[in-house]
Figure 1 (cartoon, one colour):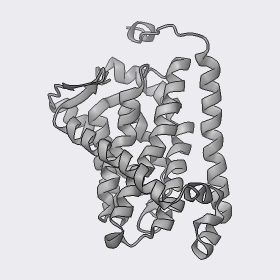
Figure 2 (spheres, one colour; figure 1 turned 60 degrees about the horizontal axis):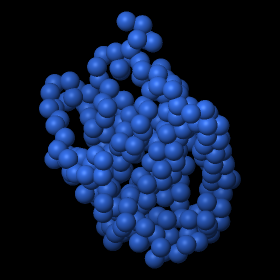
Figure 3 (cartoon, one colour; figure 1 turned 135 degrees about the vertical axis):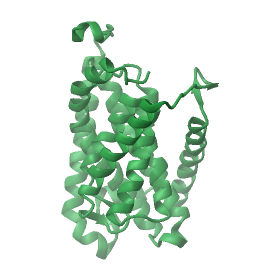
Length: 282
């Protein structure tokens, strides 16, 4: 079969073309700007606090109570949703429905392969610490949203397990890794669940990926893990000032940058093969 026969190419309104271009520019621009401003101030953050970084100051400006409330509003429903999916329930059309997941040899193999690739990729740069013991420069984050879009729940679970493996192998394993486990499931799950066109071949597909996979997914993942670190602060020792002013904004741009630049290209290349092999989840 030819690629044109394998992949449906629905027609969408032309306004998705400028929308896709605009959101891509915004996402990449924000992440590049955030990364550049971070590395110009990283030496000062340890001495003067994260407020010297413009992103840190912006995240801290709403106040600590704001982030506690927002974090709880993110953490509680997402944790419930995580366990629902594991138990075979999902939300469709605004209703909780039973989702039949056979977990045959193929699904298990896909999850294991995603975990191995993602975990190995993260471990490879584990020495490039940003906050020692908590986070590091992670180019392999470009795979998380992609694995969710391509492989569905097995891909999401693979990302969760892969992150846990990386924490263990790179020396970051702690109570905080519990939040990282579900947080990395989340960053794969959001685009899988909310993208209507997962082909990476239309303006709508690109728009949806940048919206859900880059912007929303990166931010919610960071908030989810950050809130857990805040609650677990007596056990892990990272002060709330550094959690909300450093960890959360850094994780947002660290996830977003590589996902915005690399993932759409990989998705364009890999989607036809995954579809042809019958591995794509819809």
